[in-house]
Image (tube, rainbow, N blue to C red):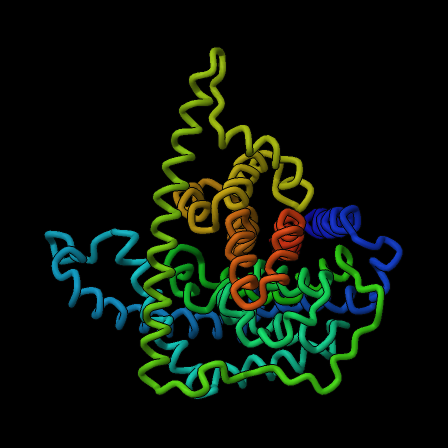
Length: 403
């Protein structure tokens, strides 16, 4: 049954992408690459979920991040002291301390890896491999790898010299890649909130899935050959080690403030809307209940059991209109009441930047590097969220095959 619903889910997501395609006649021109990418998604999910090697790797990575989070806690203890502990000396269950503060330390590690050229080397290597399997030009292949590692604003820095030459179609692909990913700096935060195996699998499935969706929703009318295009893999050139380290630490602090502010604002607004809807005479449905019913058919068609589809739909909608952190916080207390399949599919779906707030972040980031390109991104903002959400739906569908 899972396989049948999985196939139905894949066909459903592909249909939704085709409906919004800019050129329906060209949507399946690269059908061989689409099939290969879908096969790679299934293979990746199988390796991490069903093999000893995959599970061992996930365990090792989770332990490594636990070690890093321990070091991050030392920095927090120095600043916040006993506030980080309960009266019994145990770590306090405070979101700021346990989830947000480690982002600053992870950002510092990324800064060191960037300065030493280790991270750019890895990104360039993965980008080269992607050119062989995606059917996309080199810049799009490189950007897919970079999006998997960097934030949705930082990813465009290395492409700033190429942005003025990008067509609207190519800008859509680059932006969809950024919105369908998560930044390496917040992976540790997600590890503390969700099962690490789903975080890792989501990153990889989204990497392949975004090419499936953009091939269909945003096909290029012409063949593009980037030739000997050279992408800057040393954006920190000319800066000293401590300049780079300081910049990344400050960027990490900025992420903490932004995420914290958005959580306070969005959660408060959702609470207000829930209460306003409950004030309607004869209504016993909250705002999130209604969203759940709207998204319920979508959740069911990608493979989530019908009796859990309304809850899943509510969480999916919450992520779309707010952000992934708000949705994950809503999901955590509900997880144990859901089947293992629904837990896995929702966990994977929630790992991306696909939400309305990201339109402004991506458009603003691109506009800061090249004004005209930023304006183009803003114009296709809604379609960008639509495409990136389809990537998340496709990843969730693939993981459902194994439950």
